[in-house]
Length: 618
Image 1 (cartoon, one colour):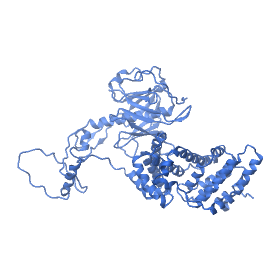
Image 2 (image 1 turned 45 degrees about the vertical axis):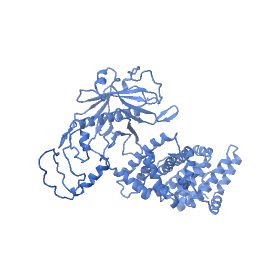
Image 3 (image 1 turned 120 degrees about the vertical axis):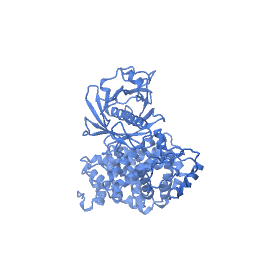
Image 4 (image 1 turned 135 degrees about the vertical axis):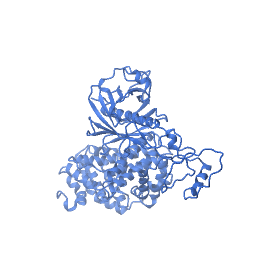
């Protein structure tokens, strides 16, 4: 059985072989098929745990897909994706086809030499859930027991270091001369099978990425094609006509064979390779005939006078689409109207350029918006997966800054806090559960999130109020008539609160009265035009902590008060991020409350279900 995560004190010489005796259960041997289409992970006893599918030439698939068992028919338990134009990798534990059940982490390069990579993982400790960080560091001094020769000669050996303590907790060694043996991973801690799987997937990702990098460098200067070690022909990139040297040829460390006198190549012209011009004392050649292409050559020459051209990464069309969708549509979900539109349409994206966590947050909500509303249902899972990936990255970066909220990041932190609540409301709910408490607890968790974020960001509020963003905090004056109507409609709840206090001396009448008054305020601001999510979150944020504790303890009167939210949810059911939440929560609360309390649910039930109200409360 796995032990709970406990960071251990560092020992005197973390680069030496660990002094403890490793368990045989924590030695994993990794082998590969002849053309490296697959890797196999087996235990020291010879039992195969995983089959890893290697997909180097299929851009729409993860580079590595880990199946449980001995073949590709086994369930997917982990994936690894090599990010384009980046040294970083992304690792997910779970099956990407189940977007709500997979957890993604980033494997981030810490230097340009590919020698150190950092990753984090959510783990349970004695103090609760933590996110410790770990470093895979290239090593020649630490090796698997009885395998010192391998560790000295191979350049694809790594040690896993617990960043908090400096303790070496795992070692991976790779043989130099072996056709089918990939390497051995030895674990010195028992943090559970999920941690071992994360260690296996990350180090195998580093191994495969390094192998592909070496393979690319091993075949410089091939003009037509080369045969990769996995047996699949690979076509090298043509000259991209960057000057003074083609970037693709530079990466292959080969001489450029496709010289060009112009910096533009029109796509409707055939590109013919031309030999590099040689210096000669011969007479000048005939003048070059004017063509549409070389008539624009002056653009390249003018540009070179200001700055040398450089290679730029390909456009990420998906992210560009998501940002365009945000600026055209999604921002309206967060904005309250014309007076705040410019903040969410223009200022929030501007802040996101300087704060990656906010950029990921905006793209996540935009992708979720598309996933929930696009008519083509076949595209929805793709956008939903993209939303989850961006949100995972956003949360990881956001958490790192929670202890350092300052004037420079206050607006971005506030914006992300607002966006994340809408994202949580908008996530597709699980299929109808036989347990109604699951539906109720889902809403309670959203309110807990809203309160927690608000408490954390209290330092940012003064900055927001004092700048252009202050308009997003302003709520117009309440119409007293609307407020009085709401209060009178809730008179029955006040009577029930008073009656409970009279017969139960432990009943906190004041706390419940405050919650009911805030309920009237919620109805009034919603009637005045405040979005239902903002109104409901405002209600939760302004609650006394004792009342939220009553909700978590499932006190009947607290649940009755909670049920009244279903009214404004139901009236906003056409919003993609609300849907049928009001109906589902109201029905669940009706099921969990007994006959003594059901009469108090009469108004929300009749408001939502009307003639189909399940029970006559007279």
